[in-house]
Length: 260
Image (cartoon, rainbow, N blue to C red; front, side, top):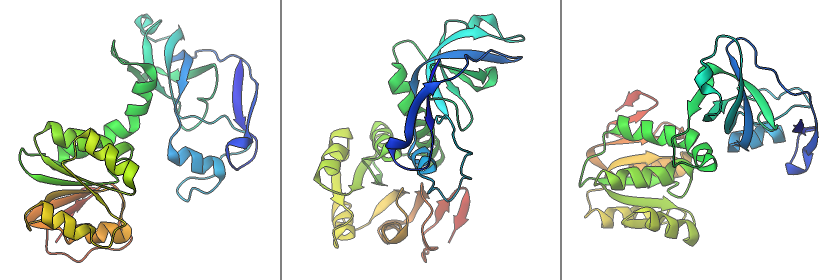
């Protein structure tokens, strides 16, 4: 079967096509005929050899931690009804850039009818993150919600989830194209957080009270500035760790830890 390997660390040019033996489904495994191979931003940094949180794989390796396709074969101990189903499947950290890959039955997710495989792949990681954040935050109708990185993967979904819950959304992003997308997705107000007065625009939009809830997907200076426009008694659920712990009397949350 055909595969794509990373032969050295670097940009997309280090991806080289080749051949590999067809996988065989072992005990508790299935073979997925791959139609879509997912790739996250973190995986591109691993390929470049620049990600500080993951050990560099041994070269050469086949990238791809998530695939979508149909189950072509099932191994011993696997429910035979999986055969022919459309699925998402986690491969671990490698192995997805191939025509076929063997994965554990426990790592399969059935793709609902009516949802395309490319869309299911794109939604899997960021969708789960956004849904979890929205459920943990407890979105309320009529409250002001500030979403940073509002045109990104998680941020764009949070804008839509907050809007669907009846919240009033302020989308913060960089540049006109991203701000236009935030508005298109449902943001009532869109602000460029590279502008020096962006926090004043948030205060103006909220009548001077600030946002009831902030999803911080940027951290650093922008994340700290967001805390200054959080309404007293509101909360901030961070999707990226700030560079420094903010000093604020407002109740905040990060990864389940409460700060005052």
